[in-house]
Amino acid sequence: MGPPCGPPAMTAAADLVLTNGEVHPLADQDETVEAVAVRDGVICRLGRSSELDFLVGVETTVVDLEGRVLLPGFVDAHVHLTKQGQSLVHADLRGADGRSACLERLRETAEGAGATAGPTDDWVLGFGFDESGWDDPRYLTREDLDAVSESRPVAAIREDGHVAAVNSVVLDRHLDEMPAGGLRTEGGEPTGVLVETAVDVVYRLIEPDRPAALALLRAAQAEANRLGVTGVHDMVRRSHAPWVYRHLDRTGELTLRVRVNYWSDHLDALLEAGLGTNDGSAMVRVGAVKSFTDGSLGGFTAKLSAPYADGEGVGQWVVPPDELAALAEQVEANGLQLAVHAIGDEAIDTTLEVLAGTDDPAAARHRVEHAELTTDAAIERFAELGVVASVQPNFLKWMGPDGLYERRLGPERTALANRFRDLLDAGVPLAFGSDGMPMDPLVGVHLAVNHPMDDQRLSVTEALRAYTSGGAYAGFDEDRLGTIEVGKLADLVALDRSPWDHPDAIDAIDVALTVVDGQVVYDAR
Image 1 (cartoon, rainbow, N blue to C red):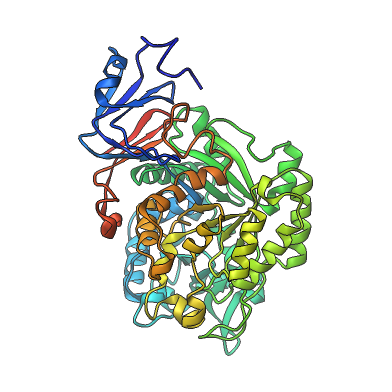
Image 2: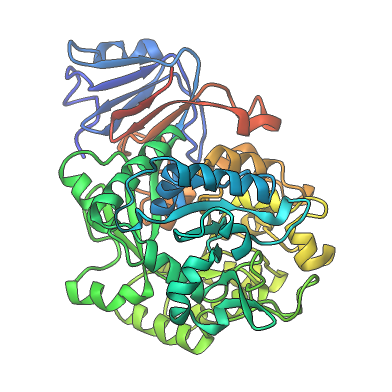
């Protein structure tokens, strides 16, 4: 990792010096400094700006922060980067305030030249709709999408990825491939609304080929850097993304540290290739084996212990408990990390019970992804086992009055959702991610600091740590990343304003500069 910028290298110049800033290391003792020096991609000295002047040589890049706040780079502990790229080059349905707005965006995509999408060139695709805030909170249907095109396949993916709507062309061509349990029907006729296993069929059909995946991930990488993200834990399934990341790493084009969390159906391939958790390069590493238990609250498929307040049933198992237990046993036998999607309280309790059966879940850093509906007993179990809570603070946008949580769960159970303060106070390792909803760490930090439930609010420092050192810990990277300290890798982000000075408007703060491995990869100064 290179020597520090002191003896015996006292007179050697740094490659990069960031000066005249408000540097928050976010380490145990978070004492601010003014300047940071970097050599060979490693932080080698901190101090006052005047103290680092002697490290400026002829070839040193000097960045005057002009009083901006410098933080460790954000680590997004749960993201689907290919889907993020798709939302950038296809119809972006995020923020659409109703069905009409979604359909207009899809029509514009259908009428335009569109982006290169490999085998999906004929499709009209949209990503990120969220009906929960509409005046008429119903899913898009085949009739809606038939109005976009009656000759081309059209698909709109809900923000959570667990629900999709397709038009009649898709149903005519592919209905036989879709499991009956994933189809929503009226009078026996498919409505075009798909959930869980039926959505997987659409994902398979629209999966970009290798050149398209390269284009999508380049776009997503640029967007991540723009948002101050320097590292991601990407959830990957049946995708060319692992090849793309390694290709970009080999060619020197990768400006994100990537931890690839492979879906469980890739486990045999990982074992055959001899790949284990943390194997890889400085930029691309194997992460966890990823599994589901349940679905989503938005799709009525999160597994609850009591029925939904606005629907029938208690959700469903996507992966039954006995299958999860068998997977955990295989993962443990091969020394791998396990990451389990669990949203409903029943799913979380079952997941923790399975993880309790492993030898040392804390050492393995097994993770529960989302952990949205946690009881007191579940929080105690998290702490007892040392399991990582990999959570998404931007989900708090659904916790307002008459929001999605209150409609699905009722007010009493809504109080059990996204209990970040209780998790942190119990000593549970907390890692923040976005799930791409949206992929903006400052939105997540803002919502965690301004949690709808006062007793669950985090301080600015705590929320930032969950998005920096929290993600680093979840990825076995706390010795390399997550704080600004001598010997750590120089992954950094500079903000135009201080989140400590503007806690009520953190989501309005702009990223000014992003540095990865000592290289400036985004500069909006």
